[in-house]
Amino acid sequence: MLTVKELLYIKLIAQERSFSTAAKRAKISQPALSAAIAKVEDKLGESLFYRDSHTVNPTSAGRYIAERSEHLINEFESLTSEFANFKNRDTGAIPFGVGVTVADTVLKDAVVSFQQENQSVTPKFQVDYWYELRQALLRDDISFFIAANHEFVEDRELSTEDLYVSEIYFHARKNHPLTKKKIVRCADLINYPLLTYRTLIAKKRVKDQLTTEEQLRAFQKNFVAGTLNSMQGTLPFIEATDYIAMTERGFYDAQSPTSQVQELEIEDFRLKIQVKICWRAKHILSAREQGLINCFKNAAAARV
Image 1 (cartoon, helix red, strand yellow):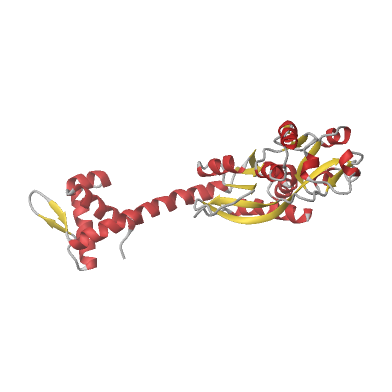
Image 2 (cartoon, helix red, strand yellow; image 1 turned 180 degrees about the vertical axis):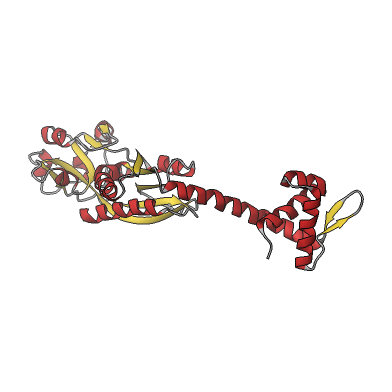
């Protein structure tokens, strides 16, 4: 069986067509390199290079091994680097990302639970939207992220796992004009200013239900009246005004069981989005990273 070092020697000689130049790149002496190649040839029972006084050329066997070794050496170097990172990730801090809805709902419970068992490790998180978190992951700024994606498509750069399904609802104060209607439709919602996160799919679904110029003008005026990165702290505002809010089902009840805000049943609007755990394809999550993810799973399960 060939070693990684022997594969590297064969690759360098095939590239340089010179034992002396290859020896310099390998940072060994030329006699040591020649002896190593002779040992490999003896092991394989094949000559790997034609030698004369001026040139060195690979035989068909040497060329085959040199070509295959390129990929194998790159894989080995990648594994070595990733394993070093793998060991380092279990100490100090765990950088990760969460989407805005996840930050508002399960982040606190997950981090509190994790730190009860891992007091020496600091969860370092950034809150953003799917695209920005994906970019941060591919830059290696974070080890994983948990976020909602309205229209997820297969992504070869990512490994993913479903965490939970988020059902999106509109909310209003209990004596709001909308709460007095037997049937509420999207055409009714647009007459009141909306607070929510940055969203495209929800706006499109509401707009698709509108049929008149007057409705479209109301839509442009009120949807969205306030774009927020967090819906935390909006409860008093919704209770005191005619603004409506769009966020996860049960969001305000979780904040305060005695809140004066209720969920609205909208006849022509339904939206469920999948919250996913995402990490780089082929990346091996460390034990601590997996432990933190398990805390998110437990926090999400407790909300159901």
